[in-house]
Image (cartoon, rainbow, N blue to C red; front, side, top):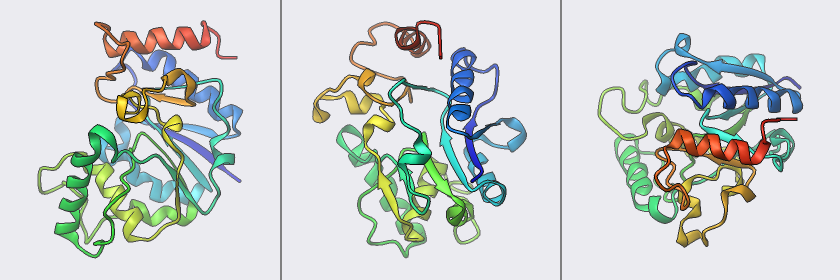
Length: 233
């Protein structure tokens, strides 16, 4: 089985890439996967996922993960956690993000239709696992990419969500510990520590409860040092 870990990133744009990209390569090797940086040569950052359509002819499975993450030492091999015929994801239409995400879902349904039963379940695109049978996810909807001709939020993420539900693929919500954004440390979720999760995702401004006046970059750097003490091994 040929495996790939793919990450959208333009090297040199953010300081955290200096330690997150080597970390991702380390885990890819540990899990028996090749690693690929989807950089500017792959086009708009919003639509670099569309290359998965072609890449899934070459690779059996792809684990996509954003570059603003820290994989912790407790993280199991994601390819062993998610079955081959199943999409692995983490839903974020919960808590403080519920209303906004459900609004985005309703909007794309209104425009494209045919997916009216989709009233819950909106993945965060920072982490997901797909296999070769899922390659049609990375195609246009009615000849269009969502947001290419109208202004919408989270265009590529909403496009992928619509495709998953419209194509009726089997999926599993892995739970927030596989994609622990600051929203999951809020009171509605019991305020769990990100350090007890497998993957910490510093999406947006990463407003974790203990962030204080630190920048997102400083928070990531401090967390990386606390977890790894300078050594990935």
